[in-house]
Image (cartoon, rainbow, N blue to C red; front, side):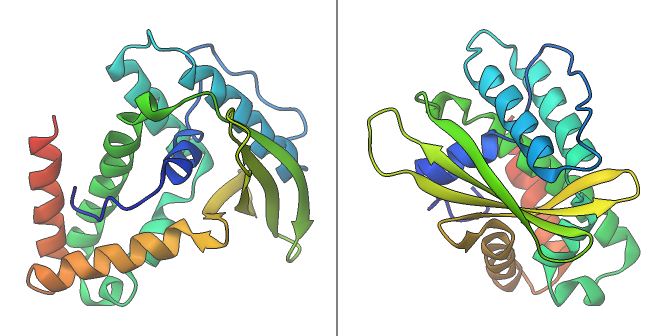
Length: 208
């Protein structure tokens, strides 16, 4: 992988829970006013998908990408993970990175549905951080009875609904972890976003 593959199965099980099932999704009536309901709906739909071992990979990838577009603020996440390199890159490199970042997320995590071993995620509550920012709390429950992992979903209220900006597992920010890893890749490959894009393109091409 381009980035370090040191995430635990817990971390992977969390992120694949951001996809949804092949069954058409009915909009959540409380979604526009309740971030807890929004996250819980995503989780339950995701678990249905993870249990579906017969789902075609292409369909899974398409649905995963649609989920990201609808429920995650990809431009803001992309800008955050690039950090200081964002202001150093030109518009074309930024646009290329945004597209590659989404492809990378889809390809990497949709391929890891096989890691699912019956875990569940229970949404337990939500707390406001501002008028438009919320943290939805949940736990990843293991079927073997081992201690659950605390998962916090950072959600922002936008004009078109709630968008997820970050996820924390046991206090570890996924966005910050990605930022550190992308920074390492950039430093190892010439110090530019263009070099990062090239490395990502090569990895995506070889993982097809």
